[in-house]
Image 1 (cartoon, rainbow, N blue to C red):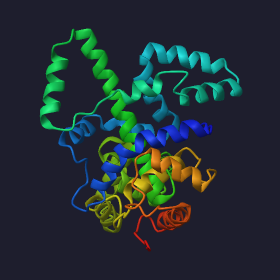
Image 2: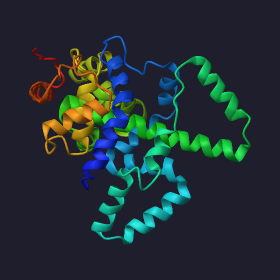
Image 3: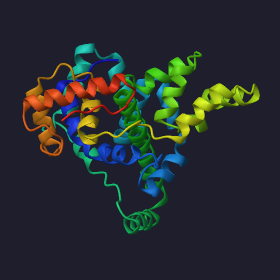
Length: 299
């Protein structure tokens, strides 16, 4: 996996943290195993095959670019990048991260997710009024957007909780690693419904009456993806996003504190009043990862 530019990692953390933090805040409640908005939960069910992207990290990024460029534009981009040098590819990634040189970030931010039943209804009515070709184009664009959002969110959540992405755990699981299997379904239960190997592995356990393994599956299915309460969900999600871009360890703690400010994180609520507190929270995050998401915070 090619490391993205520092600027792109920072922009992504600022852009994605508010949305993802709201989701993780809901999911950490043991009573909740899906998204807070029933409309989003329904979209996740309908697009459940997004879990097939977990076998290759590049598929997640591909979904984003398909959303931004469309299928024809993405094909042209892929052809250009195929013949580009590594330096040219990195220059292109850096260009994406620079809002002054392109409008991709603006296009991504322009997507508004309805927040009330009334807004969802208005969005449906507006879509119904569009010409069929335009409506189908927007529906396909929306599908790519949600596939990217779901897969990148759960991939980051897995890195937060287990210290390993789903794009690492799923390939391990399908080679027979049952520990990776259990960790993966703890994070995203859609794997049991829409990923053939995961369906078959559970069926095999049922057929063979492997009660020990079935009880482990049941435990993961019936509990929150996060065991224990995350006291600073937005902060941990921001750490996770930077970690997913492989920049968390390379940024100065003052830089991370500045990113927190730009993402709208309240310093007092997250106990990151200064660099010293930020360092302490980051140390707690790393310890929390090693416990598989069991809370162990200090003041």
